[in-house]
Amino acid sequence: MSEGNSQTSAFVYADCLKEDYKLNKIKYMSLNYTKKTISHFLHPQNLGDIKDADARASVGNMVCGDQLAFSIKVKDGIIKDIKFLSFGCASNIATASVLTEKVKGMTVEKAKKLDWQKIVKELGGLPNQKVHCSILAVEGLRKVIAEYESAAPKVVVKKAVAKKKVVKKTKK
Image (tube, rainbow, N blue to C red; front, side):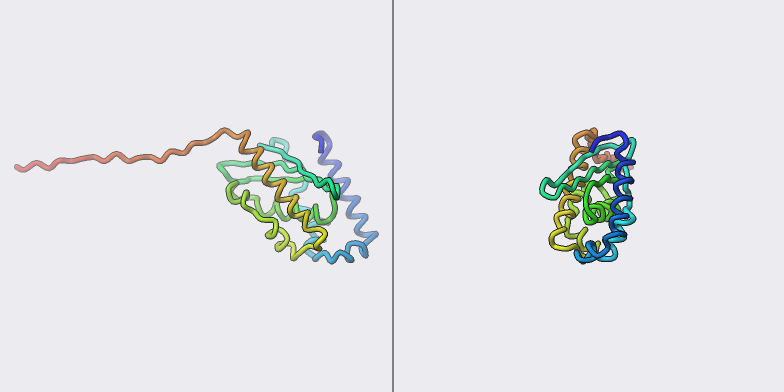
């Protein structure tokens, strides 16, 4: 996904998908999406791009054509903001939406350990043929974190060593 007006394109694309959903509810219902998945598809959280992001990364699935781009802002080892752009299906959008909600405010170390099954569980399940979307979202998260870690200056935290003060008692 290119820079520039990618955010505008994402919003236009999301509007097209919402219109498609309204016109083809039967198609979406035949996949047995949960209400939460449909809600995150129609009203995705953290959709967009962070202008002054600490890192950006994109991932894609060549089989289904889904793509995700993440941007992240980190302060003191905590994910302060994360946004995504999507070119994909309802599951792709919903899983990225839930993922960004879950990791915002989380430490980078904990976010790296996030499992795709937790995303599926948070959505109340996904159709078997759509589970790969949660895997792609987690792959994108790990990639943007790796980009951040490779670009961020390494902070070395040293433990302060207290000096012991020796006081000698003298006899009078």
